[in-house]
Length: 371
Figure 1: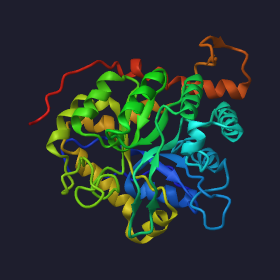
Figure 2: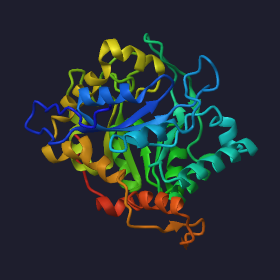
Figure 3: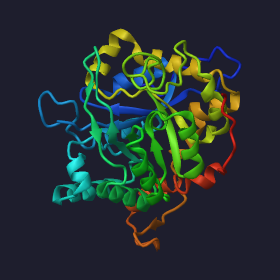
Figure 4: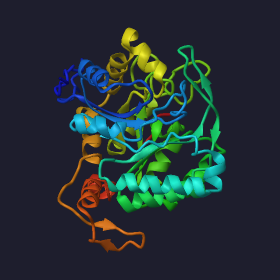
């Protein structure tokens, strides 16, 4: 029988939160069992995990992804208090060609996505891999270069779906001079959608990080894999890019004032186990628990209130179900009340997510960056 009670591991700082963490950026590739996942969470002191399925080559014997579209739902049904299910968007069809020129195959995926959102099980969609740097690590993980403009026609259609069903989207989008203009266009187009940019907002410099949050109140960031042990948080070496970790498990000085001032906009920490190799090696390495522990150390440099928001409160609020509403928003923006019980459940769950901005009562704030 699976345990529903996570172990609580306290921070060694006065800013320790009173609750276990919520892992807001993790994946479901091939070979993961619910029993193994819950054990990892219990050992590390994690209350809930947001799972984004990976479907890459799920129909092939040596593929990275899963072939069962509903596996994450089955996990959720068995452990509804521990799993936050997302509609997986790591699929071969979401490539540059289909995103720029959606065809019948892309339309079929959109129809599938809408039918899945109607079930009421999914708290969001992601991870959309739009702008991604290549990598190859010693543990067997590999990733290729992807350059899909954020405002591509297919992505706009997914944003329309997200707005209709009031669910957030998680997007992998590295910010650089080439990618930034189309990101701003997407954020403008999707102002009614809660958009979460993974990996500290695509790892921009602090000034750009702040400016985007000021200009787009529907924008949030997650800290998936941003410690010095995570592939997007390396403090040195070939793959380093605007790290937040000083290399010793503490937050770099330039990020502290920003995290304090924009604590409501950082959804949470994340482990980002996207590859089967990582899940398999974790049994010997204990990497999951170590990454959670290093995340604790990283946040312990912040105030108690900020730590709690990033550790669990923001995610708790963003992904909470709200069963009091049965009204959907149609494509024209008008209320729809002719819903089946299942559809009503979907909209009730999604109502808690939109509008997110009033939930957090956001406003533009001036933050002085250290020189």
